Length: 212
Image 1 (cartoon, rainbow, N blue to C red):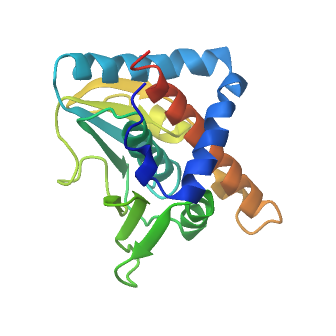
Image 2 (image 1 turned 180 degrees about the horizontal axis):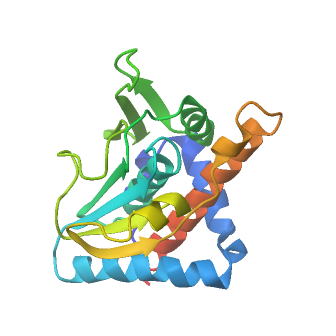
């Protein structure tokens, strides 16, 4: 496992990541089977010196797909796996939800946005000189790859309604419960933090398998 770059990861986020890794044994065997398929896709591309393109897809591209994209890119950096490009998209565009943004900030990401539009462009930093641009868009938007990518369906609705993703070399249903269900309730912050952590654990687990 190559983690030579991890000294650049922000200290608070680095501590959070250590806790994620300690939770690998909490992932169910069924989920590990799904995640191993993602790992195999990545490993095959790396072995053949090909770019690794991942598009995380949910209905609104507002919560789960963004969290997955950011955690996947961070995990690739942490494990020193080069050539990985993480993207996200929806069956429709809305905005990166502020509640999800808050959960990622609590984990240790540094997040800023450039405007006050209905769909702001966020800059998500996880290490010195390492960042992701995040805003809501459709999965087939011009900013996303159009061929030879893995489509990861992060919500059951998108999975059911998009049985075919044009250009995808592999389509994987790795869905998560929607924290939106708890918006405006006393459990809102807890559920967003839980989903942030679950996705982080699973993305780090998937990438941990690649060099092992």
